[in-house]
Length: 401
Image (tube, rainbow, N blue to C red; front, top):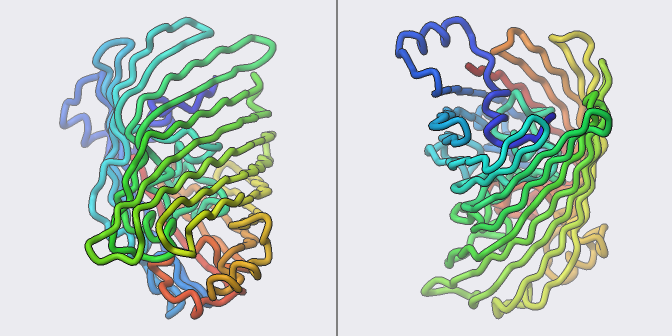
């Protein structure tokens, strides 16, 4: 069974190198404590526009990730998990360490084929196939996840929330396994990227978090060939204006629903996800936001081919429409003066992965993009200066222990 719960993900991410093993032995850690870490460095160059730094001017080494996580079994059914991450990725992410997740997991019921439990703390949001494991380069299918679904500009908001989750899993020897997770909590909104993305540009006030809901159900066949999932969330965010602010108090509510499907064979993995996102802006006393109520749409098709256990290639087509009723962006451009291409993005991605050792990986990746809808407004403050058609080249080295 593969429930994709967060405590098991930490185990899956652990493939130790010999030096790391020797170092941990020297520390004489208790048997019920596991510590893992990872680090990655990327070089990104773009023909136009900026992604994680000044990339359209000879490229940039501005995308760096390093993390340390721990899993402690206090009792057979009680576990503690936490991860601290340093992430340098453009103007909105300076590399300061932050708590990605930290929670208590208690299995209320555990059987050979069934289990049920509860988690409390800062928890990863169960959305789609990759949100739970997006923080580790080894568990992503590419350097950049499909940005139509897994926005990097709102990564902190999407990744985790301060919540309580109930989870359950059941398996059948002939039918496969089903896992369900449901939670209620407060979204993480205290970062510049999230604020500028939801409000188009940095503002004088600050976002406030309100009670929100989310959940996911996953089916997996016994041979691991077929995986199906449906996930969704209802997020409620407030806005408190600053002392000198052209915006008034406002509310942002969005409720994406995501359908996911994957087929695996010995050599191939075919994955597709489709998302429909409802956005509603209330008040703000600003014509750009007042009474905005629209649906965004996004999807991707992805194929991964494994030549050998060490080498694999990826090909993906990724599409994002900020407003499905205005896919060309022309109506928005007429109302706001921003470029029409800031409301959509179509991305063709090709990449290659080399697992040099179980602990060290190299990747190369190319993106041909039409549109700028998923670009960070902090890295690209003047929308009029962005280009509709552009290329992205990336190389990444990653290590884990």
